[in-house]
Image 1 (cartoon, rainbow, N blue to C red):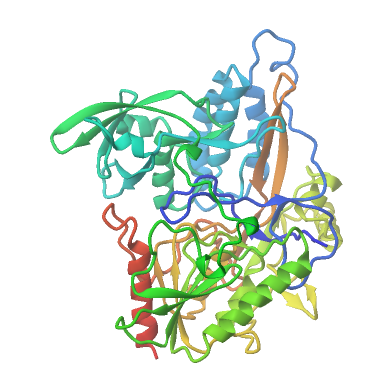
Image 2 (image 1 turned 90 degrees about the vertical axis):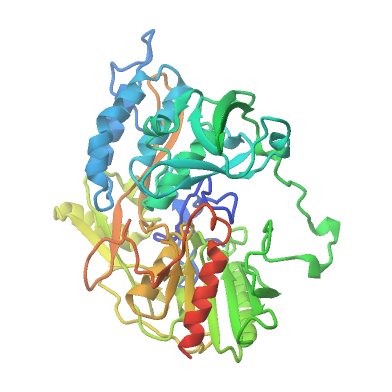
Length: 560
């Protein structure tokens, strides 16, 4: 059966910023808490126990005529400041924003407004693995205006229409086109609107921060918005010398999204099943030749260069087959066998993980490609007597050895406990010490060819770990855009209750930071070394991946 584990990673990406995918997934709740599988481990963010809910102190609401949420913030902020492991520089940003965040929650007079304010508090932690869960009586959904925007970089702040999703918006004299500038939102100049919405992203990646802030102009997540389906928003648009106002309406994206997914009952021809539902071909010089569970393999089109180069598009490291570990392992093995077959005789390989949100044990997949040793990151967990046994069972995933170590550390007044991230010895996962110079594993490798990696802002969690190892231990070229920089693996979820007794969802903090044992520098939020950085402009918004693949191919082939 499915066995949750203490440090499996998958990041929650609620609304994707980049054009390749449309929606990310977050990990589900954990089930039972038995010993972990030493190979693949499931991505889980919640342990088996339910912590006591955070309630505001007495006198901050309840039976009074006016409900105040200030006490919710004060209680939450005390826990954040005592226990959250901030990325380098993020604590200073939290401290600077603290007053504004409190005032927003204090000003909330309804549960709906409080949920919006709490989403900003959560984002201010700057941790991609820490996210809000909706209250039990509310369902998370999306709203949009039918446009995709692009956050232009380069000194000034500029938002341009990247794509018109709702075809109806392009009609008529006031029709919207790709390339139009958004200069004001509901009569507020763009720069002022962005200044008033500083906490629309939890990312440590500056490109993602800008993009998600701009995304908030045209999209929203229920229940963390006061917008409702049918609400209006007016965008002032500019095209050349012409400026005009265009009223738009928030609706569910089903209006323009293709929801006609095929299933087994449709009996589609197997040859019609592609890698992903891309709107257009992602790679100009490659064609699809093999489809696996979580990856696809491409070969060069004739006349585009060396014919023995292969491209692997690894879209996810999450093998989650309804909680059955053996089924997940079989699915991973099927991909491993497919790769070994398809890469046989390859002279160079491009490994594209730009859209990979992580999932299972990264070192399983790293061993398929790496030709030299690597270190496992060390997990450092802050120790506090504030947490109950049920709390520690939750965030340590029920691991009795780690729980005992944590209890001893509390008794001895130690500041932290640490262990290597997913380091297996003799079929058991280590829970102390460090793990250095592991691998390579010749029996696991699927190719001996030179490998270059393509990464990007959606690469996070386990994907971040692989890219960090690849660059840190000089395994080969890495090109593209900066990944997400999300590593925290030990989190604690607080159920929140308002002063009126109503459920406000679950708020997460990070209790750990991760770094390599030989230098001890935190990895969260830290950029990696890129051998070549892709141009990311309005003109290249949909082609930067293909440009990165071309560069990765050139570098991999040149090293033969």
